[in-house]
Image: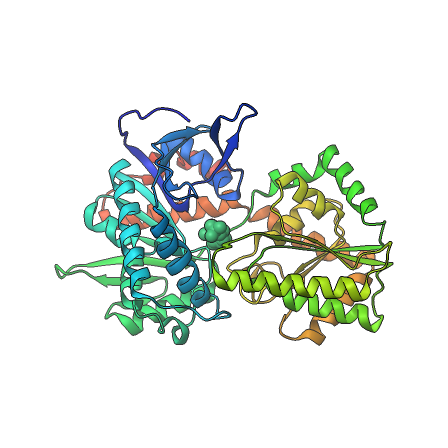
Length: 497
Ligand code: G6P
């Protein structure tokens, strides 16, 4: 970590709830921060470098008292949260109100006025932090449901900025969204942006319908004409931009000799089963882990699958562990895993190899390489990048992806075996199809999936979003000034890509 040098002004500012950093503790006990190698960082790093960028976010723990610092060449601008902010804004309003509401109320959302007040307050602090580091006319890209009020707050204090917002999770149908007591404020908060991006066509449609029902603004897809207080109108673009992964990088990781060797080791460690099935999820009630276990357990109990032939590896990474719904889910899943293993495992063959851990990227890649079948059974999911990572790792062009139609990825990954996780019999039938799929069919499906993920990677996603934002801002300002040039995405660069 470095210095508290005087505030600088940045032409490109990313704002997200979490800073993309991991705390690193050296053997001598000293602590520092390293950029975490997630997809968003990979996508935005080139723009950050070309445009002199900064990232505004929270360090992940209460009361860290961090000052701005550099991690792997990225300027980090920390926003401090107190223990009460974490409880009300993060665990409360973000993850016990908005998260369940935006995921089809799979778990009932809680509505508390103190949580909302905290959400407004913390959003204001994020907006202030972004406004204080953004240069005149800078581009500010705000991410996800935790920060939906930031676009409007920013526009009020800094009308010179070009403001983008991307929602990584679904946007619910109006019948569900309308439960939110602060629904109008949220919609107006988002409409402060020049471009609002969603994962799916359906999400963008749901948002536009909410705008029609709650405000007097005219909508004509993809444009919403926002009537401002001074009588003027401002155009906001609302469109799907399905997010992706750093495909080339992920494939390179999967090809590494060390990862290949580790994949072999994993297979041997599991007793060399004929088929390894894999599930990789944050331990979240949206992921349909219980539905997956139910289908798999029934197939074993009926003898359609045998533990000598098939193993399910389930990675469930710990998440939001102080929120009651997540505690209850952990108990439920672990009880089910214990029962299935207790009833159906043998001394030499385990039915489910369960891991309540997060793993480094190399280990994840090795798991994808080892897995013959990946099960994605989400009840609702913005995109599901695990599905895309699996496809990117399968450079041998074999392996089967079983994919829920309720995950955003199913709009793009058409050659996956699509399932409705609520239909347990249908899910069981597709699992059997996956386990028994002839090699040639695996290849023809996987080739098509890989083509899609190679073509539409996260670099393309960020470029398309920033191009749409630059275009919208140019139109609003009525100038020829090219925001893309300022971001280092000149016309030549774009043509060469
Ligand atoms: C989802 C959200 C992200 C969030 C992540 C992990 O992917 O869209 O905004 O960062 O889950 O959740 P957490 O609460 O640990 O940040």
